[in-house]
Image 1 (cartoon, rainbow, N blue to C red):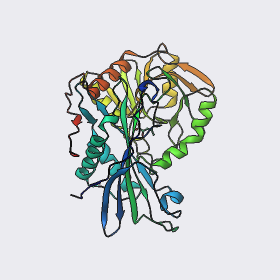
Image 2 (tube, rainbow, N blue to C red):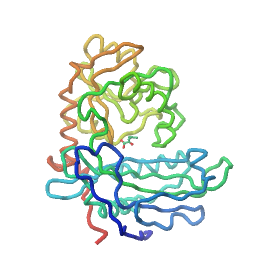
Image 3 (tube, rainbow, N blue to C red):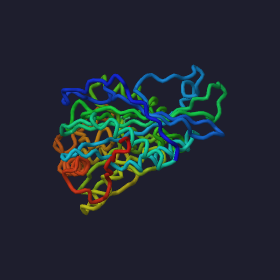
Image 4 (tube, helix red, strand yellow):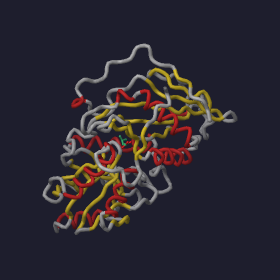
Length: 360
Ligand code: COI
């Protein structure tokens, strides 16, 4: 396996004192992982180096054609001080699916896991201690070819950075208000919707900004063809409890196959809930809100964890979900998932992996 060279920082930064003020993705740790890919040579020059600016050609493919993919994962500190990663192999596999879609090079799964373990081990003192916090890990890859021709990349860079985080939303675990978007679309089948690539998020920003200006936290996307079926929220997948059943949009190709989504479905089914992965029209959803059979709604994601949705706005009208508070299923999912991640509940599914000390 490719060797990973380690250069430790000589100027470590001070760690945040007030973990209640971490927010999301604003503070970065002392080191980052880098590796380069060149066609013919493959991946090479894998290294962990002090966190700092990247140097790339102004002609690099990513700057012109958006050849970029990323992942989001978290490391958690348990009460006994162990550092654990959650379903990291799922993230690695999804990253390779995204790479295939964007014509970026795939990475060896075992090598990527080792890179993650090594970096997180080195940064273990950066994993925050307080309830609700974690070390967010952001692997990303971009096309680095210095050529303006539009073609699949021949050179790429893989990078992993880490950031100690609290809740993604300012609301914390309190319900968010979401606007259903009917003008812009995020993705279409056959496009890149299922891949985790920067372009999907760039396409979402205008609607997100408009929604924020009207007092909503994020938008709920409809499908890009009929503008009829519910897809996902800006930074999370979405689930509903309608008349006792759980309904979540099917993975049609334009929806991100979320790992928290998958974990919630597995938990819900293990508790005996019927979970329908299917097309859900906005008409059916608003109808359920109106006849009060829409009991709960929540989003799922690595950053967002399990976030209750208290209000849905559609065509200028607001609809309260359930009683507007956190529903019982939403709360149970949040408690169970975070309990498994922080080690306060048994990991009966075998989802967590303890970061050993490969750097010693
Ligand atoms: C995540 O949940 O990790 C995400 O990537 C969502 C977002 C912060 C882009």
